[in-house]
Length: 439
Image 1 (cartoon, rainbow, N blue to C red):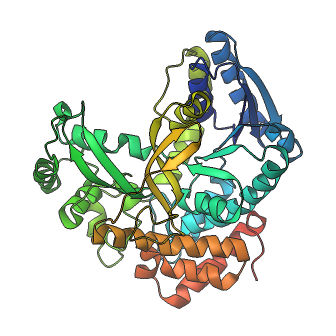
Image 2 (image 1 turned 90 degrees about the vertical axis):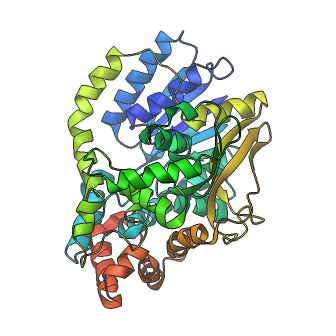
């Protein structure tokens, strides 16, 4: 069996995902192909993974492939392809995504999933995925493509709508959602045996039900404690946006408050600058994380080499691969097309995040039914922008890029139509060859 990892220069992530596979008896003898275009980072990932492999018995066969001319070779015969690329990196593309909008008074926190930053990231990544899909069709047409790259819904939605590649989108936020919430509220005693239902879209999947081991509804107590927490002056409480969701919408959602602050028109507003402090919103958070990651890089390499033991993580990838290989059922929260109305009050073309059962037949999404109307409405604010961005990437029409930006809830609540158009033009010019040509 062969697992190919695209974007293998992400050394910590590749160690987690492929290290996880090395701990599983049915997977540990796999061929593992590491692919990247950054030779230095690829070499570090290769060294670290080889060291982990040796520590765990040396069963895996690890090879590295650097550069576009080696991509087909890396993919050839793969059964599973893990995608974790970041086109354009922090410098220059993330810098551009944040600094150009600032000139228009438009501030962001993460900018990788929605907003003007998420749109630009999708537009520069989808052409690369088009090339991946062509190669996969040619050299490993039956491979399952496990996408971890953001913007999750846009990239996974594109792959599922416009390529023949079997694809599922995977995120960390589903498996940590209720655990983080209950821990934050001092309800750790309810963790074991809890039952939950999460559905919606990536980064805005709704915790629709949460019950303790005896079937008792935990939401009444969650709502009481969340309201008290948001009313407090606790400087350590950073989840104020999502706790406001509980108060106003009735439900908690999967991804962090710094992400969700920019997915709507409620929290980042020039006319109400005090909201940033009130909700503890970290502006420019993603660039700050990128800088810190660069500063940690060499130290992290040493730490990884000095800590070669690997304990299986909560990442879904190895569990999915194991479930398919062993034909055993495993449940995930997966990003899939809303085919057949898995969530019946969202569009069928939308990429939704729903419970899925994995077995020897692959990814099997579960029908959820209707979301509460207010939750579906919040999701639609994002889906409108997502679908238009996918269409813009597919058709290369400049007007569709403008329309995607116009439908983004944060951008449109802050800027005029003319300013949105000028901002898009400035971003396209600043990105240069990182973007395709629009007409």
